Image (tube, rainbow, N blue to C red; front, side, top):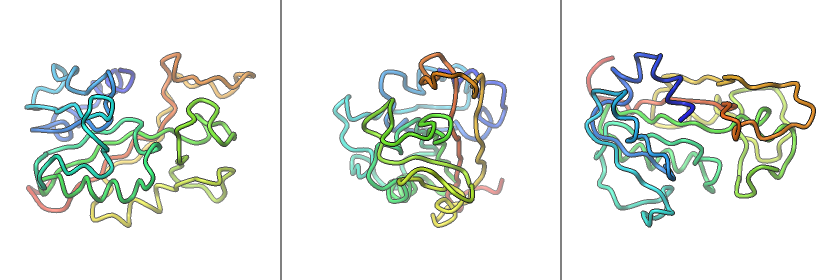
Length: 194
């Protein structure tokens, strides 16, 4: 919900990323398809979640290769055993030129220097875009991992909407509607030129 408020102001989500048929991996009770009215070129977005009985998004064989124009994932990759392998698998599900749009928690804003995570015991990884050193023993540096994939990094940015770094109690600010994450978009080679 919070991401959609921000994305509606960015025309690239309407004209490029959420276009055609897609799947929202790990959507929970808030699937991207609920916001299709904001993305007029989105034809359909399948809701996929373990709790909906769909199986494991990391290794799903439910879909044929090259089935989707885009894959959306919000706060799922921190729960899988191998995020890079998961992304490689998802790339096989995309048509040439398709996009993966993903959000992961930023380790410094979400976990705030504490591991295991105080806010979600199921987190298996923390994420950073790039920094020389990390406090986390399970940190994944996206600037290192993403270029190893058979895809082009189209966008990567740290989202800090309304995040307050100086709160003394260090609460989970996501429950208050604040974003403290990293959003990245990768594109499978092929398809129409950009």
